[in-house]
Length: 382
Image 1 (cartoon, one colour):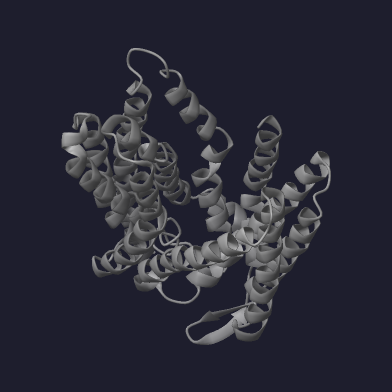
Image 2 (cartoon, rainbow, N blue to C red; image 1 turned 30 degrees about the horizontal axis):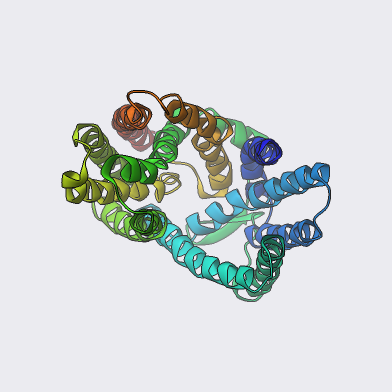
């Protein structure tokens, strides 16, 4: 387990390092080309992984995975979605992206389970799964090369005319100095941190309410895939209808705060199972609806489209920072009370943290709306 922790830490640290420069890279080079390079690079590293090299090389391979899934891919993917529509369509676009990721992820996961089961033992099954995903990435790279529209970051469209992209490091620095972009990242980190804490909910349902392993497993699938798809698509549609992705996020944070508090208030015991499951569903929908809209705020905070990659890099940097430490922190919070007179207190502390994060997220959304309105007024007066 220690070696696994080292491998995942290496992946997380390289991820964190790559978010911002990956955003700058996405503004400089074609998103299509970067995504193809990412798919092929990840597949090649996967083939190396398939050979089961020594531990030190596994650390290197996961470092490569971080580069090919973040540095050359993540911001390029965000920018490619952002450029598909105007500010009034960003909710639906990113909602469809997140919902699609959940749907395709489910199908791919079933495929990996199938090929895993073809092997005679666990190691063989894992090798089959690694090979399966590596081949799948090569197929996706070919499909992207054929069907994805070629973009040219050296040109931008202004008033219906193509003009030379005035990209330079001064623009990048200007985006990095925008408090609104960083505040959009704060919305992300509050939501993503709550998502990590919420990962313990299935164990809590089992221990506190006596749900069977089968029921808990089904609820876990619902949380991971169904809520992700439904929450994302509904969030995209509604946020565009009200005309502000940020306002919608603020409303959803209120829901998160209410239902996180309900987790604390609902008494443990079999008699409360229907109530806790209903709360589980409602909280999850609020949680995943916000997750779908992290990057739908880019246009709304007045970042030019040719610098959307840089903005997504900053938002990602802030949002996903907890990956480096919060899994350990939350795990320790739960483990601290195992074997004591109050074994559920660790879970309760996680729920309290979720409620506090939701309140901070709501306040951040409220402030961001005010800052945004002020920036729009200043732009109109200029």
